[in-house]
Amino acid sequence: MDYQRAQEIVASASEFEVSYNGVSVWIDKVHDDGKTATVHLRRSLEERSEVDISELKEEKLVH
Image (cartoon, rainbow, N blue to C red; front, side):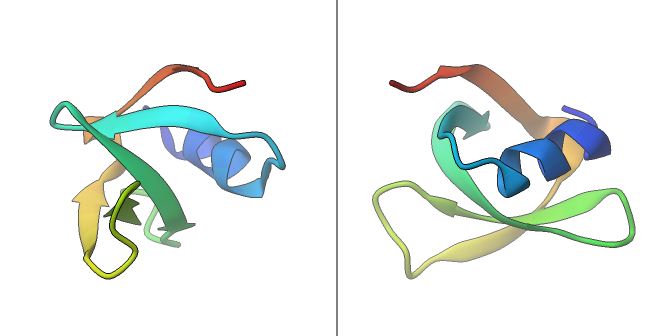
């Protein structure tokens, strides 16, 4: 995924299926460095990680 698309997903009112290393995640924040984002597992709001945006993959639109 690229920086621009990650920003679009965060700003959107729609939900998008995004994965990191094959695990479904929610993008909390895209960082100003243009390379990293804070994400959390969709089922666990407690555990957050900073990851490279390039390692995020958009799977499909969730209805």
